[in-house]
Length: 231
Image (cartoon, rainbow, N blue to C red; front, side, top):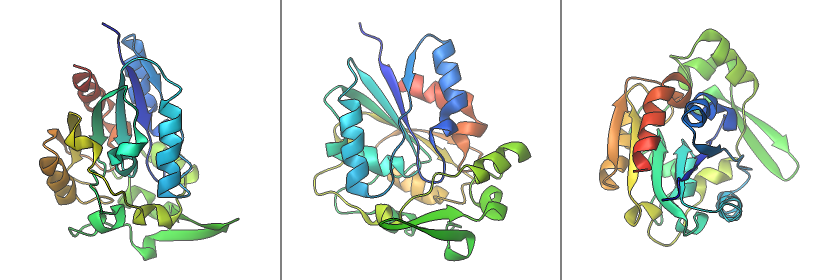
């Protein structure tokens, strides 16, 4: 039986390096890992980008998504026929007609509020960052001070239009088996929102007492769940 390739997709405000400790564990165990970089300029653009990227890979795929990337892999048009299972890591599990922005506001608790954000213009639009002094509180409260500072300095911003994107057909998790990591001290995507989405999707759930930066802070837990998703 072919061993799957693990595709690790980052979300908003961090780049693919958020997976580095998980990548190391999976690679040390002899698995193939690849972590693409989403443009995050439009939701449809990210869907198209991931579909094209996955199309360059062969063999079975297990796709894991952090944060906003959960919305992207929920879109059926983002995946190829080689995808066998999905892992949502403190991530949106979006369905047809929904938006990430609305899901994030469904339950109270998110600190992704205007006072904590910085908006900068880029050619063709605007992009959102967390204020560096707020990065720990909002995103990575249980990470080490050095990690918090590095993450805050190297943010991958997102165009706010990405959070208003939707798709028309039933989400991928209706047809593919899914796993979910729920963080119980998440100040970005509220814990109750994560629980609600995971229960709706009938995902196999592991809860972790952690911030939104769970891939960095609890890599053993996340890597273990990704391996579970590989069967």
